[in-house]
Structure formats: structure tokens, C-alpha cells
Image (cartoon, rainbow, N blue to C red; front, side):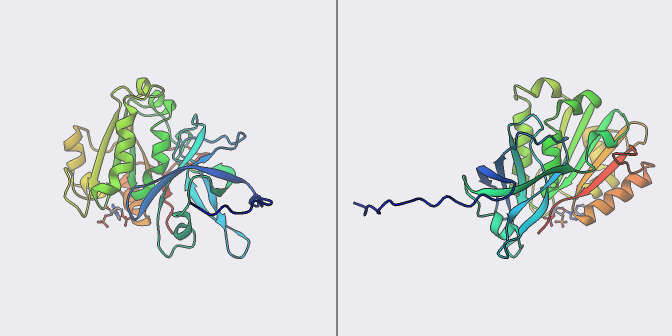
Length: 270
Ligand code: A2P
């Protein structure tokens, strides 16, 4: 029998500014987890954009970082995919959130990985490493992507197979998704690779593009200015190397105000 604690008054938790409630948390590895938050009714965003989210710091000031919204714009909730950095100021704490906890969310979405930043073409390449798949998790669930492109190639490089799981599960779920499945048809192709553990396809995406392996595996022509668009999201190293590959193929960097052939954004770290 447990001792009954005397019930007096329950102290309500202080309400944080712009606070949202955690509705689910999924841990994938000791370095990666995803979570979902309630969505403010007024929050509108374009697939691929990010918002600032975080927790209250010990000094009473919000500790915020940029996080891509991983959920589609039609979802009632917001989903995020995060790294856990053991000594990271935010993620060392954020990794411990539980359902019912509060997370601060500044509802001002921005970002360059949006469909409007690219000129029309036939084929879209999404190139991600690690948690850089988050904005593409949103975009892959956006019907407009499939209205604009005949073919979407989702390339994801991670250290090991367990780190691919979030993206692999999502892609697997899309074909049967009652909302988005019919838009996708057979347009979405998934190309996962690992660099530090044996898997069906090994190597960095950049290497596999440069040496022609990706093109050979998928039966695609080399990267081409007329037909191809590229969105890049990962480490600074990946972003720089992919930019060089795009520029070498004649593609130029686009933006909201000046759409072109590729766009790039840094995945959140720390
Ligand atoms: P590698 O194992 O060769 O470093 P991280 O977990 O460190 O963010 O890395 C995620 C994945 O991104 C790893 O598989 C890593 O490969 C790969 N990666 C890191 N830098 C680059 C780069 N410049 N180009 C392509 N892939 C990269």
C-alpha cells in the first residue's frame, strides 16, 4: 500500500512563452530521437522551413536552436528530428523530454529549402546526412512536390543502419499513406547509404555521385542543369562538397527571392 499524500493545492506549472506540449517521443539511437509537439493554430509554414525551438535556460532566458519542421504542413501536430549531443547546451536536456512536457516554439518559420526557391524541372534530388533528412521528411509528404516533379530521389547518408531508420520508416509508410500515397505513385525513389557499417549501399553520397555509382544504380543521367534540381541539408562538409558538385554541373544557388537550380541549408547540430 502506498502512503496517501495529503492533497492541498496543486501548484500549476508556470506557462512558458510560446510553449507547446510534447505529444510523443521516439528514441532511435543513443544519438538520435524524434518528438512531436502540439501545433499553434495560427502557425502556417511551407514544407522545408525551420523554426526556433528550445527550453528555458538556467538563467531564465530561453535557450533556442533552429529546427527544421519534419512534419507536413497539413499535419495537426509538429514533428522534429534531433541529434543528442551529451554536452550540447540544448540537446543534452532536450533528449530527456517526456510526453506532457513543454517546449518553447517561436512560431516564425523561415528557410531556403522551399519549393519556391527552385525553377521548374523534371527531377528533384534531396541530399541529406544525419538529421539533415528532417526538412525532406516534411517535403516528401507535400503533394505539391509531386505536382511539380516527375521524379524525386531521396538520398540519405548516415554512419550506420540504425541511423537510417527514421527516414527508412517514413519512406516505407508513404506508399500506403491514404493522404499522400496517390500523389507519390512511383515518383519517389529512396537511396540510403552508410559509411561506417556494412549495408546494401556503402559510401558517402558525394562520392557515389561523383564516381557515377548513384546514376548507374538508379539508371539516371549525370546531374544536369536542364532537368535536375537539388536540395542539400547536412553537415558543413556535406553542404560545401555538394555545392561544388552542383556548381560543377552548371547549377546555381537559388533563394526565395531569386529561384534557381539548387538550395542548401545546415542541419542543426549541438
Ligand atoms: P563519414 O562516416 O565518412 O564521416 P555525422 O553523424 O558525423 O553528422 O555524419 C553523418 C554522415 O555524413 C556520415 O555517414 C558521414 O560520413 C557523412 N559525411 C560527413 N561529411 C560528409 C561530406 N563532406 N560529404 C558526404 N558525406 C559526409
